[in-house]
Image (cartoon, rainbow, N blue to C red; front, side, top):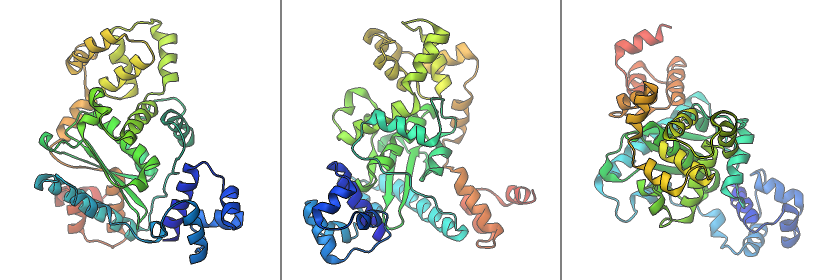
Length: 365
């Protein structure tokens, strides 16, 4: 609870551009106390919290009343049909199992920093620096995001339900989760994962998010909440650093206007969807509006296979689209829990979705 109070104070303080010292002076408290408070290492007295709440123009209940748990809030959303609720219930069960495995193995993930008062482009650059990525492509975004506190599940969702991704932050557990629709192409899943990661870094205390596929279509994006536009911009810059695109074009391709084979070459290098790469190239003025529209109409999968002879990542994804793709970390936690005798073999087989024969073979190693 102290950590939640502290995080909310810090978020509001940074949103209005105050330092800890300025807030402390304004509410008659010490700078040191505000620092410990924001770190969740001090319990504020009611009078102190009341002064802070009044200055930040919030009711005191904002800091001390626990919000309705994320999934309960989602299930009550208007227009939530039975099939969508079924998908979200599976996601909720996965989250519960995941957190239980962390308790059994005592392996809890730390939260990544919460960003406030920053542009999407700068946030993407800062996060890349924090993670030590430089400007190189991210080869396994799902594992990377998970190790930085966003637990992942890729699960097939039918097209009729209009779900590309879901983000949820369970405040009481200080745990974040993302669901990515695995029926989408691999490159599309990568972009959705980066989009949900932005919600985690910037909007985790703003409530759960269900992202409609229209959010990833330029013509419709402007119709959605500004946080979706922010996450869209962040994902583009996080996955495709503009400086790296320029470097490759200037040093290797050496053409101001790109042919379609150049686009696919860059798309494979960054491991993203063709549409995401096209947007970046248009933004950097390597494609005209006419060429952008022309290239968007082409069947990129067909042309990529014709040009490069293989579609390894796409084919791999097609094989897994009929079932949930559990994260590597989730499976590792389950096996550790079994080896520590916290769960039995039957439970392990159910958790990781395998039969007993395969499990026996794996456990002998």
